[in-house]
Image 1 (cartoon, one colour):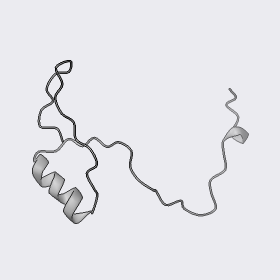
Image 2: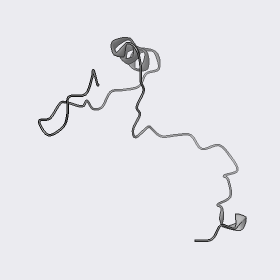
Image 3: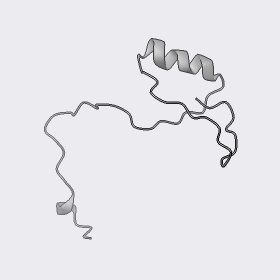
Image 4: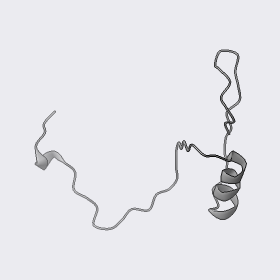
Length: 63
């Protein structure tokens, strides 16, 4: 692999709009309030939820 500047791809002429977020971890004081903010105010949709498994320690208040 080369470290030459010429090997760096050129930036697009216009900004590219994101199509989504794949994974996000936020440490918050109040998970319910944070969830309401991100879903009701910002408009994000919750598409998954982590559940405790016997082979994994129970996460503290994780959604």
